[in-house]
Image (cartoon, rainbow, N blue to C red):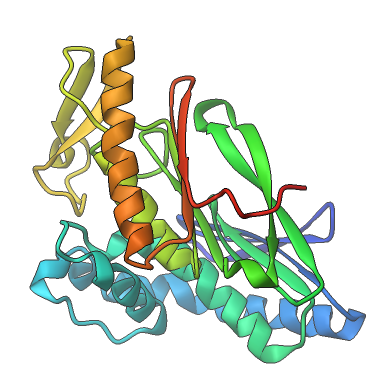
Length: 281
């Protein structure tokens, strides 16, 4: 297992890397609070990957099998996935968001911060005190790292996490969405929900290529379930059908109180729910 590394980036950001975990964070506050919070994140970080690796067999089990875990990040993953358990998913659906949440929680417990974010590969835990705001970008085309707009997070918004999933991401997707961005009370919940909404953006078309996840990665938690490998040109009707299916799942999650909002993108088409009352910069 690689050793963790720490690097100072421009813009007062800190980069923490360890194997597949790649975190960029930034905090705002008094100078001594910033120093203490960053030191806490650096001290916690080396334990995260070994802790997850020790429980990986359980974390790859479907939630329907009630996986038992003991580590703090693993427990965050299971807790975030539990509300969605009637739909197939494993705790791995929330891994990046849970790591971001854990690092942010450690920093907040150490020092008073006015604002902070922890970005683990695009899944982001955020903290904003009353009277403060934090702007976040919404992914338009993850394949080109393009942004399609931004939202302003305030303390009153209730947003503590933002996550994006889709077929261009680091993990396999059962759907065809280019990007699904979910806003929720924490990053782990947003991560799990984004995975499931992205899976639901789907249709039957000869333009879509799929393969069993296990043939692409023998260790995939999706096993022999079919995942998307390529999407060719789709008709307008196919795009509309796929986005309607995904939006229905997002709106069901929102109605149940699991998420605050979501943006779904497929090609040039966009659907959204729950963003009407959120401020924009």
